[in-house]
Structure formats: C-alpha cells, structure tokens
Length: 346
Image (cartoon, helix red, strand yellow):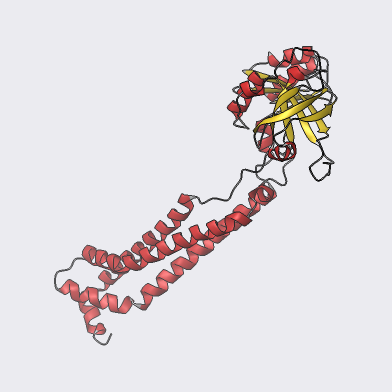
C-alpha cells in the first residue's frame, strides 16, 4: 500500500505515520521522501533534460527489505548508506545512489552535483535497477535520506498480509489530515476486464470455434471421400473373423499418421508465429492502456503458452480417432453381406 498527502509534495505528519503503521495487517513500512523534477547535470553534448528525475530519500535497510519483498528492483542496503551523513552539510560530499538506466547513462561513473529542495550534494551511481517501489517512472535516483539537509516523509509504503483499504483510510482520517491511500490490489483491479481484454478474449474464442469447425469439416470430408472403400474393406475383413472393435482400431490406426502430422504441423506453426510476432507486439499498451495507473510496465512480453498449443493438437488426434470409430460402428450396422453385394464395383 502507498500513503501520500493531499499532494505529492505535502509531507505526512508523524501522527499520521504512526496511526497508519499501527493499522491491522501492516507488517512492514518504509518512510520515503520523494521530490519530482530534480534537474540532472547536462549531458556531454550540453543538452538538458527538461523533465528531470525523481529524487527519493529512503532508509536503506527498510527500503531494501521492501524492494526484496515486492520484487521491484531489489538491491543491497549496505551499498546505499551515505558515508559521513552525520557531518555538517557540504555540497562537495558524495552520496551513493541507486539509479535507473536513463539516469545512469547521464551520470556516468563520476560524481555529479544535484541541487534539490532536500539539499545540495553530489551523487555517484553505485547500482542500477529498472524499477523501484516508491515511484512508477523510469527516471529516478534513490539515496540515503540521512544525507538530506531538509528531511521529511512525503510517502509511506506498507507491506503486509491482507491489508484492508478501509482500515488504512480510517486510520489516516483519525489523524485529522487528508491522505490518499492506494493498494496494489485495487490498482491491479483496474486492469481486469477492460474493453481491450474482453474484446481480445471474444476474438480468441471465435477463432477457436472457427478453427475447430474447419478441422471437423476437413476430417469429415476426408473420411466421407474414402468411406465406400473402407466400408467394403471392413466387410471383407469381417468375413475372415475381424470383429467390430478390431475394425474400429484398424481405421483409427490408418488415420493416425495423418492426424499426427497435422497436429505436429499446427503446433510448430503456432510456436513459430508467436516467436516471430513477439518482438513487435506490445502487450502493455494492448492490455493495460485503459487502466488508471501507470506502473512499471516493461515486463509484459508475448510468450508461448504450452497448453494453448498442445490442447488443440491433441483435439485433432482425438477428433480423427472418434470419427474413425463412428465410421466403423456405422459400417458394422449394415452387415457384411449387404456391403459385399453392393461393394464389388467400388
């Protein structure tokens, strides 16, 4: 869960923080200070980033535990601790920073100065992660909050089993301040049953039904074309002692090679299609564009689902065997003498 003030830059009072941390279901918390739009040093070619980066001040131990538990950019807390943070503020001090790839490219390997409301100091990138729990953007700098000259808590990140949104919002209201409470479960719910997803599901189901219908039609036409010859063959074999069950097995084994070839070919074509389309398909914009949030969305690749390929292939084999069995049963009803009388010309 994430608790912020009425605005992103409004600090949370100590009473509100304590009240929310004591709420039922809360197992861990991380107090962070977030400042948006911090200007980055100019690039080597002299260009400036108009948007800037998001500066995040954290307690390394609690924030590292939060990152590990959520799987959002885990890192080592020891590498982020500011050296000599208790000394008097000095603009020449170098603070280790956890940065995003875009910021790492701008900072390089040398310490560079930052000017922010929290304080002025130099930062040096010691680790790079693509995501971090405090913000959703792709341009951020995470440092030890002990290095800040002006410290405050602007966001509270909570973890726990079965966090209750009503309980957290009630705790925030009792503190007498306005606060916004966001739960990850609620944010994820906004991405469920969107028009894009439901439309894609309907198209997929229609494609499955159409494909199954065409497969059934192809198998029926193929077997009907050879039905007279097969019926006569079964009649002759029954006169030599072949039972109806054995006849059904014979027809099934006869159709099995073609069914296996068709199933294997369909499975291979389906796998190759997904492998070829994956680099050019952005599932994020297809599935999540209508949601209200903008979380870290770079980890939704198109990949092959094994069962989605195997089940239709098995269905082709089962369908072929079932049709062959029905054909053998139908031929057995007419009797061997009837088929042999009318089947010599066939």
